[in-house]
Figure 1 (cartoon, helix red, strand yellow):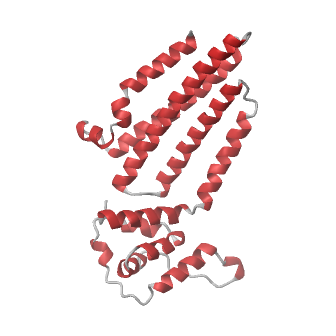
Figure 2: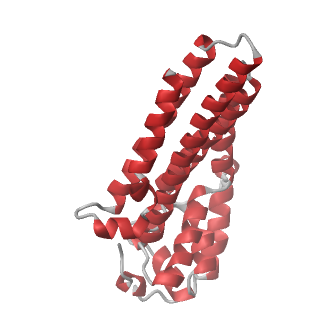
Figure 3: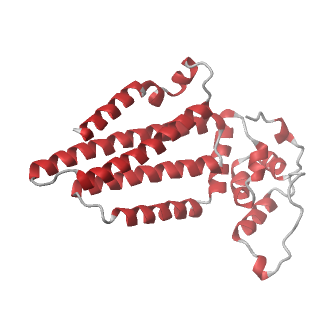
Length: 253
């Protein structure tokens, strides 16, 4: 009965919040004073709160709920499984909100990290759903730790700065808007994507940062860096292109 009450409240919450969770741009236009950032923050807050409460409820139920016969075990699987599925709906809504935010305002490394965290929470809920189906979760803490480490490893290997630069350059081709200052702040890892994606004169302008670092590599073996090496090769491709500061006239957000 307590678990059924929790699920009923959860369903009522999702129904009441359906317009906000899936309304997207139309919902934002109808809601006075609500910004994209606030819309995303609401989704992230709901996701973290719901995931935490779901895991607590499942942990308590796994210890306290009766499992004396097959009927008890079936009811427990159904109720806790439904709770996990409802939580996954909140995960998808949070990812949807972040996607809208990035389409409207561009991509950043922080936003990419938030997406990675939300995906990890979704994976954690999916693993919990598997544990519910098996009615055993002794392996779950280890799986949560390893999956979290895996997400961090994937984020590191995918070169976040380069990924963000690539998608912002693609967005520039579609919208004509580009945050030049943010592109410059991404460092050497973003340089190949900038050179490959932007017109030569625009790329030369973006890389010609008057406020950028002036220190150079001393050439020692211990100072060698793969990202810097790739950036130097990419800069060489536009070194002879005159920079007329044209990128400063690009509309920024």
